[in-house]
Amino acid sequence: MKNVQSSPVERVIRERRTIRSFSTRPVSEDVLIRLLDAAVWAPYHSKQEPWRFIIFMDEGRQMFSDAVLSTYTPQELQQFGQSATKDYCEDTPVHVCVVVRQGTDRWRNEEALLAAAGLIQNLQLLAWEERIGLVWKTNEYNRDDAFAARIGLNSGERLVGTLHLGYLRDDAASRPVSRKPADQLITWIREEQG
Image 1 (tube, rainbow, N blue to C red):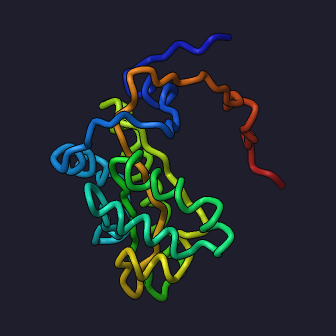
Image 2 (tube, rainbow, N blue to C red; image 1 turned 30 degrees about the vertical axis):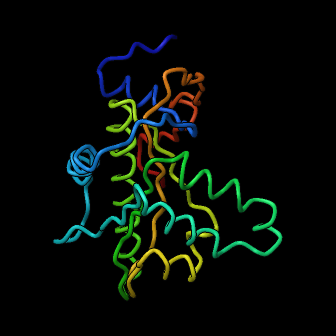
């Protein structure tokens, strides 16, 4: 049975893709703030929002690039350093680090991470509507102490991921993908098990 899309929200959810090649058009601070102002409406369980953002754009992208490169081995630097620098400093207009507070309560820490994931999904969908692509990375450098120090992570904070954003190129194509239908992923419990 063919699924009939019932709303603009469903259309954006189904059509959004990870696009890794951006146009040269800059993403303005105003656009970023507007998108983040809407994305922060993700649900969270504490009395305070658990997240903050570190944004690298314009000349600040060099600081982000240097932080990533600080995690490379000498061999990786030789092999990938130049292309990574070009990617982070020239080809990607904005890098957003999503950070959450972490305390001693394991469950609150997990809730903060899950809430931030909801926020990131909100941001992906909002950006897509603006023809802004977003790549959410959780690469090894996200867990590296040298990277954390260089981007300004505070004690008691955890990096949820780095987001790379830019307007889609005019020739950007989004390939259709498939997902298993939900009815293939459900375990129904219709009566009390004895």
